[in-house]
Length: 312
Image 1 (cartoon, rainbow, N blue to C red):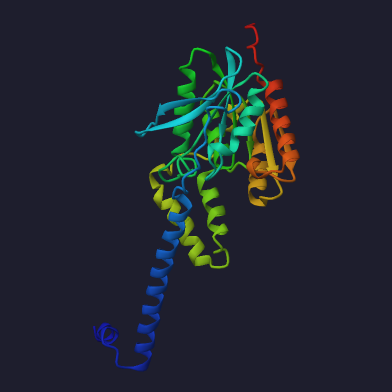
Image 2: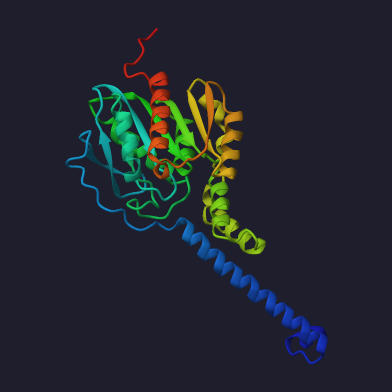
């Protein structure tokens, strides 16, 4: 009891030193926790609003489609009509990327007869809400596909998906449980949302501060404790057997390139992979954009025919 009394009211030099060290440790951990919480907030908070895009005179006659989200509320997407009864290619934007940045890609795919649907995830300029890096976004993709499938002018049984980083994760996750997905192409895909959270934490410049980085990474996991039972993509890749898959990796993102190649190695056939010098479609130069568009279009033309094959 005398020892505890000494630490409550230190009188000796060594007890004062220990008390000071304990106080310093406590406030260091407290400060690290507060800063880590702010880092997680910055990662998941929605970005600023996207500039308005007038689709009235936009090539391809896109239509605004409003649909309901699984957890309440509504969102709108843009439907680019192709040939009647053709399949639909759904473009899944990347982390904090707006649908407007995918419009040239949508037009390039539509030019070959496909229906194309472009929409925003939560956390993007017009998506609102906080990003979950894939957990909640999977339901949003399903809602978008359901909205398209209610149309009379599309092939409701055949979809193609394209996605980049967050959009790539969601595309693979949904394709594993939806047999309507007949062709899949993803860029810079990761195995589970915690992997992307770790990458984004490191981008905040805290890689040299292990305590702060660990707190932030654990903070994201604690924030999504209820989703802890959701398996990583690698656990269910066998469900994609028979679905043509194109994986795109870029040397600009070495960690995501490594995860993309790992998932490619684990994925069943048919599959192919291509290493790009530059990725992130919206940031490519004109010639690189055309090459990117041509690569995707040729993949879909080969693996997602405009006319459904006759039943055997």
